[in-house]
Structure formats: structure tokens, C-alpha cells
Length: 215
Image 1: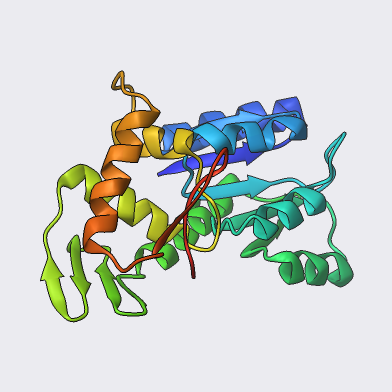
Image 2 (image 1 turned 30 degrees about the horizontal axis):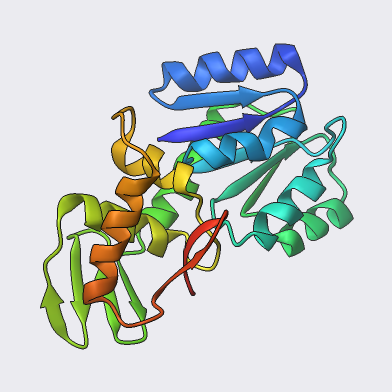
């Protein structure tokens, strides 16, 4: 599981990263909220842990922009703000959980794992005549099973999991190919192959943005 921790308190950020890493999680930690979307362009996270009282850009504004982009990554708010009005605002903006400071690191770990399990439970997604089984890696179009390559499956899976927003080519390269030395043209070639077996218009593209599957 990979977690993005957004926390400007250096002592707390260091201690949480150390603890969560010791429990087997991969953690990227940023102190400056302006780096938030830069990381999301190149990395995929299972859960985002977000402080509200950040310099430059508040946690509420980051959360709002994240959901406006169509990003459905689970977000756990970690903050000293304990008023019910603050909680109500965050949940209305799309937060998935809310934990107030001070807290036990173990509770944070349990909540992160619970959020991750909730997402993993989603197995079958039906979008028009297209049905995708995210667990068994199967694809049906119009009730007929369609076989695709492993790379094409990973591309389709990521687009479906992030349906409703444009996914950048950099994200797809990172998710599917990792450190392999490949470029944008490889993504375009695999998208072209996917479009041959999917309904017309299922995968949308926008020059300079990336690709999107509608929700």
C-alpha cells in the first residue's frame, strides 16, 4: 500500500512516516502543499492523509481541487480542527475519514487500512455495454469476453478505477511500466489497441491532458 502524507509539522511528519514505513506501508511525505499535485502527476497512491492547516494552500482547498479533477483516491483528514462544522465541510468536499489530533499512530494505521480495504472490495464495474472485473482481470464487451494483453489490461484497469477524470500519460507510464525506459508513443499504441475492442468513444483523449473513461 502506498500513502501520500501531507503534513507541515516536520516532527510529526517524520515520526508518522517512520512508523507507517515500519508497518509495511510505502510513504511519500510532503511539507509544502504546493507539491501535492506535482506528486499526483507521477505517482499513484492508495490513500492520502491530509492535514488541513497547511501554509500556501489549505487542506480544504487541496481536497476540493482533487475531487473536482475526478480523483477518487480515499482521503483521510488529519487535523487539530475538531468542530463539527469543520468535519461537515470536509465530508461535503469528499473526505472519506476524519481523525483529530492528538491521536494514536496505531489508530491512524487502522483507519488507513480500513479505507484501502473498502476500495479493494469494488470488484465488478459496469459502464454501458462494458463490464470489467478488477479482481479476476476480465473484460466483457456486450456480454462477450474479450482478451487483451497484460499491459493493455493494466492501462484499462487504471483508467476505470480513475473514471471521470483525465489521467495523464505520465501517470499511466508510472503505473504500467514503472522504471522501464519507454515513452508516450508506447501508451498511444496500447490505447489504440484497446480502442479496437471497446465501444467508440469509451476512452476519451485530450491533447496535453491524457485519457479518460467516463463514470
